[in-house]
Amino acid sequence: MWHDEVVKPAKAMTIRLSAEQAEELETVASVDDQPVSEIIRAAISAHIAHRKQDEDFQQGLRARIERAQRMLDKGRPSLPANQDGNMVPLNVVCFGMLTTTPTATVSG
Image 1 (tube, rainbow, N blue to C red):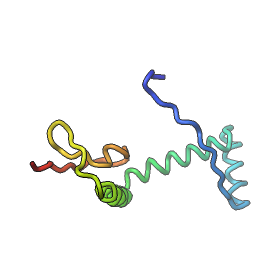
Image 2 (image 1 turned 60 degrees about the vertical axis):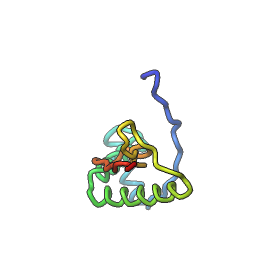
Image 3 (image 1 turned 180 degrees about the vertical axis):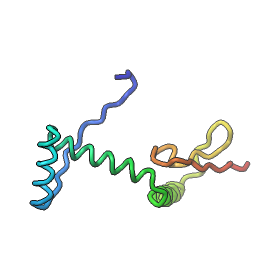
Image 4 (image 1 turned 120 degrees about the horizontal axis):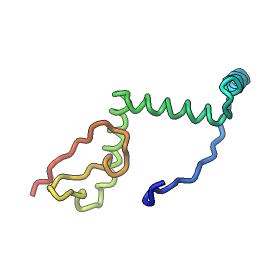
């Protein structure tokens, strides 16, 4: 592990499955010789990776970021700018999910 990496603690979550889903999940885990929790984590990771590539998801994420940015901008004198005078959008600061990052030039 790199010295500057921050390890986030695991978060316990509870889900409810139908009896059929639970049985199928346990069967898959048994056949794959994996813990049920590992099968669930792999499925979640695959789903998130798939969603990140979906353009509709990215558009929805951009819209949420823009709304959050507008909310943050209320009462704040200006957006942070980099050394070139370009605004640093919220998605650069908070999210790593977007494939493109639009920026705007701060006019003087």
